[in-house]
Length: 183
Ligand SMILES: Cc1cc2nc3c(=O)[nH]c(=O)nc-3n(C[C@H](O)[C@H](O)[C@H](O)COP(=O)(O)O)c2cc1C
Image (tube, rainbow, N blue to C red; front, side, top):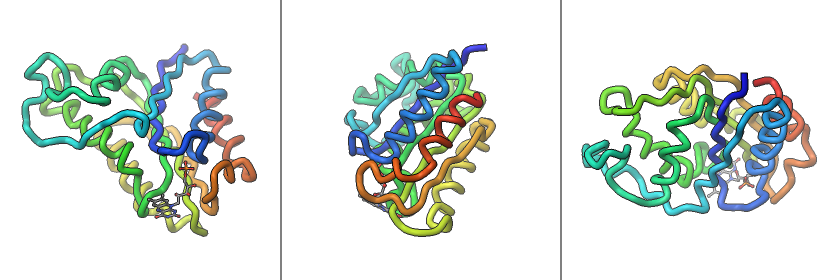
């Protein structure tokens, strides 16, 4: 059964390491017949949540219009969601985190259009050594997935990739493509 998959990327670097992982994932999932949309959060202007508590008052998730407005319909039709982010200060990049914060409108208590997303994936890479660097971001991602009732369908976390395209020297791109095929 073809799924609608939304891939949100968080790096400001075009063809950066996390973007290449996202693209490999997309290749894999498209080869399986899924419909995939990539949304580059860093190429939009997305402000953080203002905690105004006026979600849905204008018929849309968020009262304010910016890059997030384009993400709303994509979120609302997605069956699966993928976060592809560089590790920034042991966490997600600010660009992708701003988009996640704005998803507050879809929190169960406020929500007028519950998301039908059933599963999520995290693709993340960092420059330093060892898997410990990902403890914070993985915990954050898993807590979000758990809170939203998304099944964690996979995590690909790649240490020791710093410079642009360095991820191509690892097997992470292949792993991400296989993960895409597995959905
Ligand atoms: C603002 C900033 C913060 C970063 N913080 C970390 C970090 O906490 N740990 C780490 O291992 N690498 C860190 N890095 C390195 C990036 O995670 C690494 O270069 C990664 O490959 C970038 O992915 P991209 O090419 O998709 O942008 C940081 C880089 C930047 C620019």
